[in-house]
Image (cartoon, rainbow, N blue to C red; front, side, top):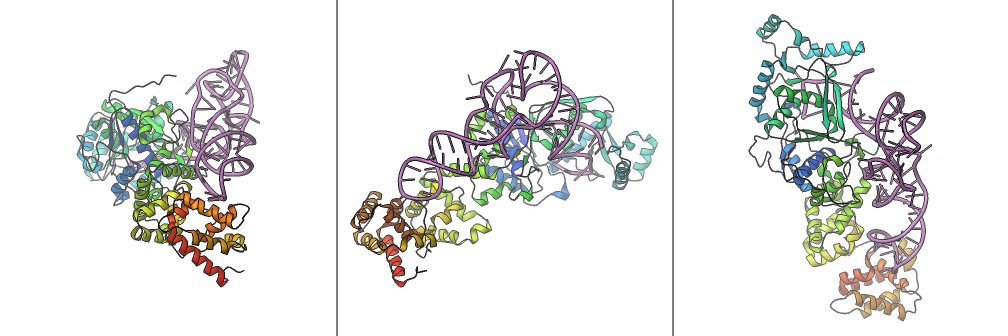
Length: 510
RNA sequence: GCCCCGGUCGUCUAGCGGUUAGGACAUCGCCCUUUCACGGCGAAGGUCGCGGGUUCGAAUCCCGUCCGGGGUACCA
């Protein structure tokens, strides 16, 4: 089949988070989708901070948001830090604009002032609930007599501005993921557009800004789908053209409920702390709810940019399967070359805040290794563990024996091999036949084969296993010859002598 | 309660009227091998939520139903 390629004339999309905390993976995935959309069509990706709720604002959240994007490898063309021609990119700095637009709406009869107090509204809802009526604002201020409104205003009562929803008819809009969505207009609330504190609500601000900033495609979370009719009414009231709407599904936890703190780590940056690579996480979350249409699973950001289309986003929610992320992360780790591997692991080690990692003895050993051992030696050690690790945080434990001469011996390995009558002679043979300066993998193999022959062992495995336990304390890990080559003659000698001494002391007797 | 959106192996997905329902993770087995992993091969796992239609033929279209999720704020 021929690859069909098309580009839209102009695409401007935005990620519009509210600074109420550090973004979690479901939220950040919408950012990813928007980014991919922009890059696919050579358009612009805009970051806009929706800080219209002063009460919920969390200090530092904006930086967390930008840092999450950076970590995943996303870049943006306009935003709070880089500016741009459609700024400011904080809604709290655009208040005049919303006020102006609201006046237009009131003048044209598409909005009205409402003087109901929060207490009145609560009472109204309570009444509706008790009488099993549909909940929602009963529009009482919409139909008050002018003189009554004047009186309320004269009293100095605080007011909000509400959207005057059409009382009849159906609102229809096209969602590029779900198709046609229809809602009866009278079932939609007269939503507050401007709060009593002078801040707009999301509904007003997002419509005004999306229009003012030339947004062509609104890709956002599923939770917005039921308020989209309000937005459609607003666009019409202003006489503006609708953007393309696309509502992406949520991400669920293993129990089927929306992913949340109960499911453990959901904060995007937590995955960095745990030892995941940004590229792997970006790849993985994109694949929950989107697929390129072929069998590809591992995809770089660049590849996803080329393959992306809104239509291929699934309408149904997906479960965040950490096991599959771990596998993918392992794939990415194996892709690192020697120098990237060293830099990545070191960078992780020096910056992660994960308490479990930082407090582990293995991590402390690795920290010392970075200071005390050569880059070459550490790199060689990491290289030997690269294919059996899934997280960056696994390297410390996996490579610990390379850097610690006081390693402990696995009791199972000891029980199985150190009781063999030939092990002492085996270790002695290896010590005696060690070359002086360096030991290549081939030489290590020759040495071990020679030992097996000299001792008349039936299988060289009988030499390999005890040597691994003696040299690393472990029964599993990298190939013995590779590991011997990295360790080098001096360390091998020292470790075998230490083991021999312990055997002679009877330290392993049970 | 009312409104909206969903429903393909345990999980992520392909599929758009005719396929033995394909791939991936996880699971199990075999191979490779000095172990573990990596890699390779293979197996098991799906009555396409359920019930009705439409059609020669339905995972694919229509209706109903059940289940799940979201909304129903002067939060986003």
